Image (tube, rainbow, N blue to C red; front, top):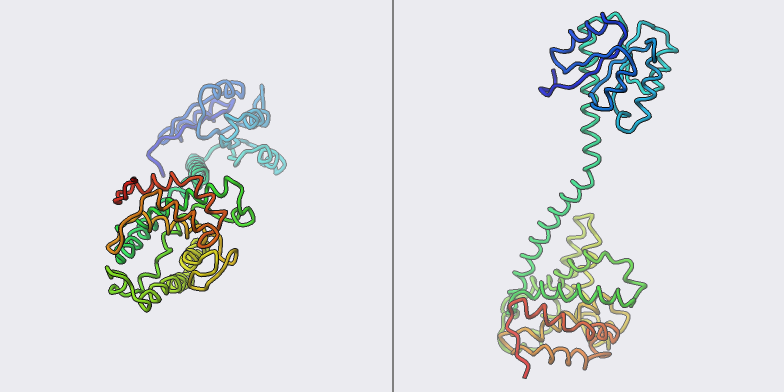
Length: 366
């Protein structure tokens, strides 16, 4: 037999010989219970649900057709597979039984090997049906779990890669993670305040925030001698640094050629190319002005500058939180989008909390 677990079968027939033969044939492999009437079966079903019912069609008190109607109309018993037992071989009777929900007919008198094989086949089918139902019911959960695992792995790889880039240019580390935190707060608050509603409904906010981690990916193409220089950069060196925005776009564009995942990379490309543009058009790489700058780039500009201000570098001391906030406010309408600056001002304390809890050495307020 296919399974070591013993299934339960009810045999219902008003003929004692049929019950005896059925019991002797099947009881070696299954738990078999015999009943001689439909009402007795229905009573038994109130207490116990079998894996299969073998049901005689012609019985005096209640025929098999009426019994199966009663079985199928109840939620508790409606899914029990029923095989009709009959001495009749007319097609009309078979069609009626199948229409009422029977899965097969077995003709009497029984041929024991055939009876055993038919029961085995139908129990196997029923077992596979249950497995399929279970799989379908749990498919979404399994897919979500697997997707979560894959996303966590991708995020861990991405985080490690960008932090390695982060450390190449004399930052104190954690810049990527902090700007990711700042961006989450800024974007959520912008949405809550009902601002830029033409753009924000199309965002997948989780992907947007995750993709911020690639905003400085272009620095991978900048020489260490420039990134790690402790003194003031020459004009030529600063111009080279500016190119990290274009390099970042090019790197992400190359990745886009090799994957169907475009949404995440589309956001990342905006962040890489637009986070150094300025509201008054004096930024780089393209000198976009005002609303020419993608809104995600305008938001990232504030997060990026705030973190640069409060972080200590080899070539500068850190600002206090209050000083950083003042610099951003003073550049409202020049460096930064005035609307987004106003959002920032309303939640700037949250920025301070993120920076303070990240372990960087913050300047103390005087």
